[in-house]
Image (cartoon, rainbow, N blue to C red; front, side):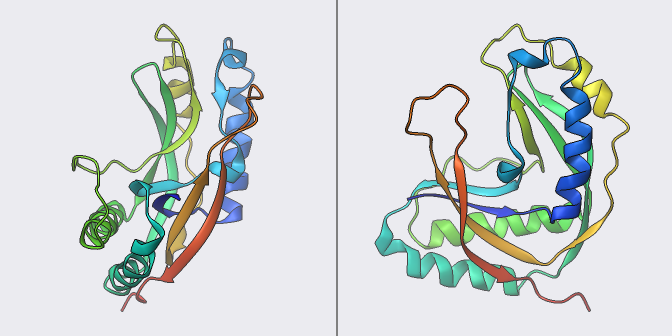
Amino acid sequence: MRLFAAVLPPPPAVDELAVAVEELHTLPGADGLRWTGRAGWHFTLAFMGEVDDELLPELHERLGRAAHRTAAFPLRVHRGGRFGQRALWVGAAGGIAEMRLLAERADAAARRAGITMEEHRRYQAHLTIARSSRDEADLRPYVEELDTFEGTPWQVGELALVRSNLPVSGIRGEQPRYETVGSWPLERAS
């Protein structure tokens, strides 16, 4: 199964973001982007790709340890950015150092469980809201519009393991389906 570790924003944060994203849909060229749905909004910590079922017990145990060693932390959806002209995202603010630590621990947990991970790179908290299949798409107006977006803070209290079910129908616009297959509480802040 195709898996990743993530922080899932709570429903009020998703609702706030949905209002901001709806406003982006009114900008010129918005109909040429593939917008991600609310059900797919998450902050990926460690992408694992296809994971063999026999590795799951060890992965669950190690992710549980990673969560237990990490204190709960504050977070909020914050501003926006882009990766070239291909992906539009919103960022995060608040406990970024703690989130980066949790991402490092989730990555290490997967590696120690025997999962072959991509090349390690510095973690950047982002939640993808749209993609473009065209290199010439200009995402700058969307980033500028998100420049003042500040979501309400919430407390990140768990690490989630999410299964990504890729579209299979071939219907244009079909989105992946995400299913939480495990979650572990973070240690309470002292």
